[in-house]
Image (cartoon, rainbow, N blue to C red):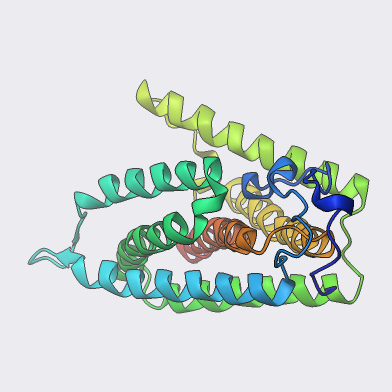
Length: 265
């Protein structure tokens, strides 16, 4: 990936550096204005360090969340009532971060901690049912992300207009599918067919995992593009937050996919 820190626009004027779409709301083009002359600019390395910082915080939160999950005398999991509230809190903080990208260092930190606790509790519950699944999901998630990064750096995967259009449409489609299933659930109708241990469920879960992975290409390309265009350094936090959003989505989908596959055994 190219190094950031390109020269800002002439005369120090601030203007959007690009208008291309991504499937990730954290990379909204209008946010990443060119930095005024003389101001520190965004770099790929700086973004990577901040993404690692958020990841470490999520892992720390996950350890706490895991430790808080309890089982009853029969060994069955007692679903933590607080998980729903923390999930709502993480969602609200994520929305605040998206609307206030300049505050992403603070709100992103809070999101990473809250989301980490939620992921830890969910992971613990999955691990009670499918022993060792969390380690498998973690390895697969990291492997997918690194593989996509290598393929991107080698030029095998590039954010061409057709590729971007395909990924964005697919991502929006999955989001609408999630929303539709949630609305139906309010009326007692189970429409989550991709979470069933059937051939169709595994196939669609695999498709969603693939789509989540391809979103990394758009994330990496956006980081490279905004860095080269000289976006203000403060937006490294927002870009890092965007990477974390994709990482969380991918991990949850991989966890579900492995659970479905093991249920079929």
